[in-house]
Image (cartoon, rainbow, N blue to C red; front, side):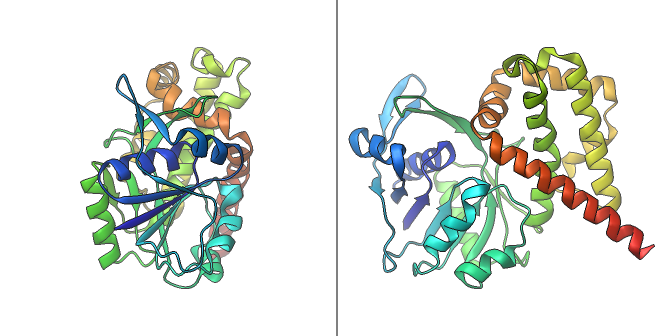
Length: 300
């Protein structure tokens, strides 16, 4: 089984390390400074108290006839279309798009070809230090496993095979029916969280700012109540907790989470590293919400 990780940031590097450790023939595509670090030192990552060098191939181009069973696209939203354009002539059948986006999947298929896209989202977080050493981990299964689905929502041979790969690599996963709805709900959660860091005078201690925590809690309740009303459901169902949890309790829980090591690794680090991406996703999400509201009024 040959796997290409296209994108050597935190997410791509972690999945590459885990898949290689599970025995898969794994390559990682990188560019710029990250490429030079990987060429010189290899992919180094922390595992418990040890420093491990992943057994992977490091590449800087993807020839059209270099065929992989799965290409995992682990880039930021603002790099997505450039990446799809670079991969459109490669003959690999499946591109797993592990990207934050509300775009139509058809737009992606218009670039690479119908049937090649398997929408997904990673369950991981962490950081890469100045020496290029990865310090990252998978998100706990109960919070956010790696999530994916066929665009059609149907089961397929490749979702079955992808499940086997993740299971063998001990990567928690879930298959859903509607990946677009799942990503919409995901953004309903992460956009207010990222906004809280950007609004705080001291982002690292945002959890100490009670006004911002309360404001964030209100945004979460508003987002999920609106989506539930417009779409009739949330995905996953556990997102309904944001609708029902009393505001004071949610505010306290947010403050505790923001101040925790979990909050630092899985929330703060990404918000700090990708402000342009998160601000663009903020615009996309609330523009999408506005369209949903306008469409509902037109129907009424």
